[in-house]
Amino acid sequence: MAITIRRQSENKISDISTLLDFNPNEDQKEALNQIKDFVDNTIDNVFVLTGAAGTGKTSIMKAVISYINSYLGDFNLLAPTGRAANIIAQKSNFDAQTIHSHIYSISEIKDSTGRVIKLRFNAKSNAKDYKEVFFVDESSMLSDVASESDDFVSENSLLLDFMNYVKNGNENNKIIFIGDSYQLPPVESVESRALDVEFLTKEYGVTVKSFELTKVMRQGEGSYVLENSQMIKESINNNTLMPLLKYSELDSSNNQIDDYVKDINEFGYEKSICLAWTNNTIRDINKQVRNRLYDNPTDQIVVGEHLILTSGFYMNKKYIANGTFVKVIKVSQKIEGIAGYRFVTVYIINTDNGQELEGSYKINLDTIDNHEESMDSEKMKALWHERFKVNKDLRESKNKADDEYLSAMQVKYAYAITVHKAQGGEWDKVYMYPEQPSGKEGKRLIYTSVTRARKELVEIKKY
Picture 1: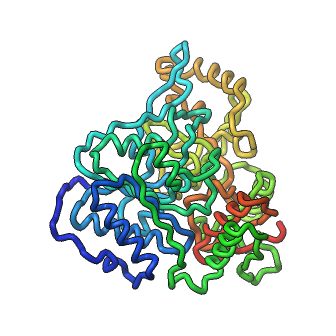
Picture 2: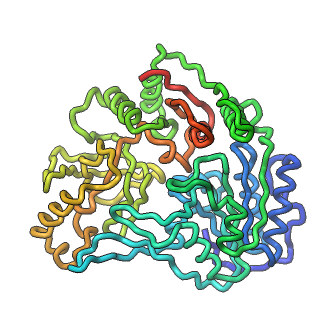
Picture 3: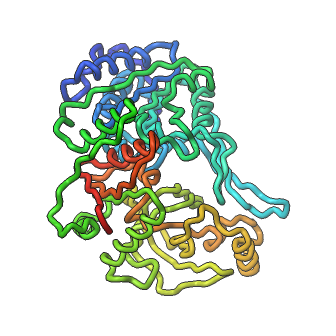
């Protein structure tokens, strides 16, 4: 959210802790005072606020935003994914958006024949001459590695482009990175660099302040989910054996998949999720869940299907990010075969924000059970050839976004997903199929899984 009213009131709040709706502990008071000093001074550029689950990071951020809004008025609340942006908006009662939508525009990359082969994320210029404060929630997900997929490319890393965007604006702009350093780092990264004070200082030449919240809020005391996360955190810090975790006791006949399906039928997809480590486990659990939900369906896509995009989708000036959850509300009975691919037409809802997407869309059915990250290049060439012959708009523009088959959605079932796909999300109940962790990264994997649960954690013992 970027508020356009630029005001500088002299009536600053002297005690920022009064903006909390609870009595803070000493840890939280110190964090608030340090961030208040950071926001008010003209020396420091970046503040890194870290803390494990339940330490009050979101409450601190909400209070600081209210403080800024009371006298300065210009702030942006951002997150790396749409799901994370929606969650922090709900928690803070302020609008939020993804970093991508805030700092990037999209342009075309063409080959020697003029055919559009990829889309490029281009960093926008920041021409604002007034001071802004940028809050980035779930900053552990912010990658310092340039990314490229079958369809999209970015010349720089998201972290680099974001830092440049902020620095190119007012010289007094501020960034507050908020995150949990015990969570998994971004894919292809060793550490979460947005939370690394030394890296930010050396790499970007900024002055950085930091504070780590270490005490669990009183509201969280007695929660076995938070107790689990604290035990894993201590195991990581002390390099000790993985602790035995506590789970909910269910009333079923020891079949947790049945319980999960019951939850879906009763509460929908938004309240619970199943997490697993390997593609094989995820495939098997998805199959079992679908068989129970839809009575052993023979069609790959049915009405009510819960899917997740495995590649960014861009068509008719609409961009839907990789990792977005969608629900099928209508599906055609006709399967179309072109150049070795199979397609089906669907109408869908973006369940991350509850919005129905206008019009119909093609889904490439061959991506659902395919574990490969990239599409087969020879088959894609054949598909280009076939569509080029029959699509006049495509022949003129040579842009795959002008063809619903070339730009068809790539999806997988989303009843069970990987932990990386779940980052930035929260559910009341998390069903988890834990496999033996290996070293620090294995513990971080389980920690990230456990902290996706707001209320309950269920161990899947068999499926």
